[in-house]
Length: 275
Image 1 (tube, one colour):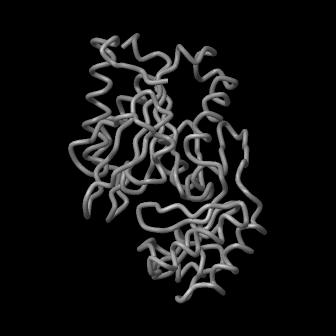
Image 2 (image 1 turned 90 degrees about the vertical axis):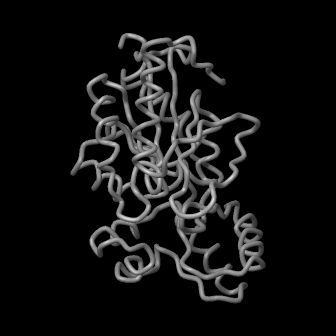
């Protein structure tokens, strides 16, 4: 397994490592165990809040680093960076959108735990953690195509963007998962978790939705996890081609990670790295 030195894995959670319906990662346990045994850092990179990610990690101890709110906040070894926008900007944009469009608009930041639980299917305690947002806000609404266009235009007026994730449209800053991944690599190098030279590092990224495109485009090995319900979306990876996992969620995650590790450990030169 000496060829796995310098390998690091970034993964989206909902619909990728976590099952879309029950949020279980159990089917990915074999690959997760293999990563841990080979000291390969696994980083969560998600639209979830830092509070949510910390709660998951304190219970399951899966991740060497946490990247929340679509790249807006990064926590590695308690070294915390927040490249995302101020909460006041997020709130002002959401208020402007609510005044302009044809349907009611709420955000996680201004909703109760019960309301978030209804929208997400999360239990109330986890829904409360999902509401602890600093630099992004998933919208709870039922928009028309015109509403989505108008909301996106308003978001840009505030220096924000409206990103479609697996379930929600989220107001967030110009930071994205791809940029956060690059910052996280430098933080891991600083912490002594990765070699100091970028050429000595191989990145794997796994995601399932359009807000994962930046992360996948920056990865040496990109993996698109099929969505569990509906057609597989076409992701703009800047001309790069991603592997398509053979199954949705943790099943596809598990088989694809194991396949990649097999390739890298047996024939490392067979993996073409796209810088």
